Image 1: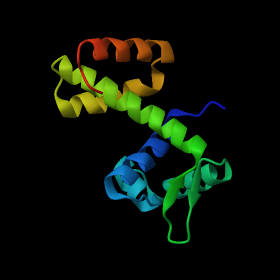
Image 2: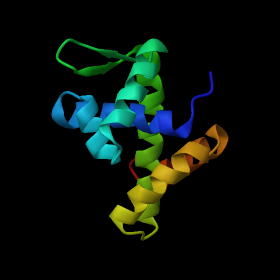
Image 3: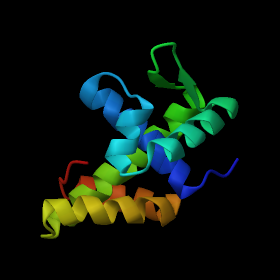
Image 4: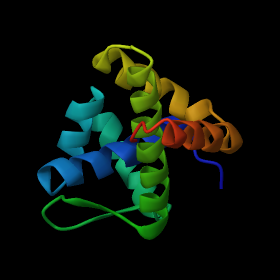
Length: 125
């Protein structure tokens, strides 16, 4: 199944919140992505029905295995691309903002080559 950029952002956001805070709720995702609570609520309902996310009675979101795979892939791309841009002299805030745009459109082959190059150069992702 091909998943769209906005869905990748939602799933990555859940992963990032879980790593940072230990949990993620729809309201946290809305705040992080600067989306309305209603938009996030609709998206989370769709993600639950499609098997990407589960929600407990307290409203805490958990990524399913297939949701986690997508989120971790996007998070890795985000981090490595940002680190590469920073190594080139781009300011950190700009590098992370730009990497968020690049991570979705870059082919797997190009990403792998960038990752290999940065590893050779000693740039950690």
